[in-house]
Length: 285
Image 1 (cartoon, rainbow, N blue to C red):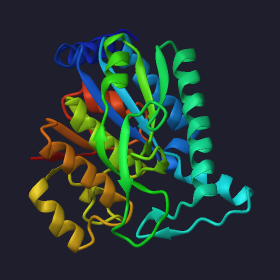
Image 2 (cartoon, rainbow, N blue to C red):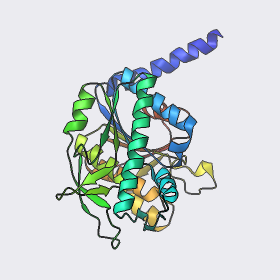
Image 3 (cartoon, rainbow, N blue to C red):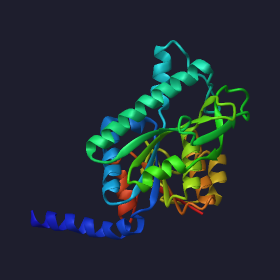
């Protein structure tokens, strides 16, 4: 029993330099995919954010909601269509997207506050955080926007007050039209604009692996110059591509640290931020 207590004390001592390093600093966490739909994973992630909030670190949470959006569209009789990974978004679809993301956002804010943090939800379009132009590189995908500018004021007002901003990725163009925005892109652009100390992309895999069937092939560290070749050889493929691109964009915009983290691991954020080894794949410049 005493050995277990001493071990717990050792964990706290190991965390101390990281608490010092990141206290009053902003970290950005992107949470989405199937990991977000697992209630146990979701609760562990939110508790990690509460811990950060209590020790004076300033987390910023950006979430997606792709699977919930697809399900809600299906219930509304709207078939989801994708072009090169982008959801084709007409007027009816963009309304359903915003409604779904707003509902997810409210639930996360409610639970963060219930667990003891101070949190507030922000919409990328209502709060005028994300200015976009219509995406046109993959044909006409409707109301899908590419981020051209980030207004950090609403976010910083919350972080400086010790409140966790919980942001969903919608944008607005110069005409006032609302657009769906890829959550990984939104995370990268906001991380860069906010000059955060670290961006962490939570996924439902352990990181970047040379062989998906071999956990031992995990790449704990990856240089940005290796990314293009790994995409070409399909080591990085599918939904991992925008996540890695988000990390490389942030790094090239002077964000010091970028990580792909397995959100399925219990308290994965605390392990990444507060331990010497960390987990997942760190991408370095």
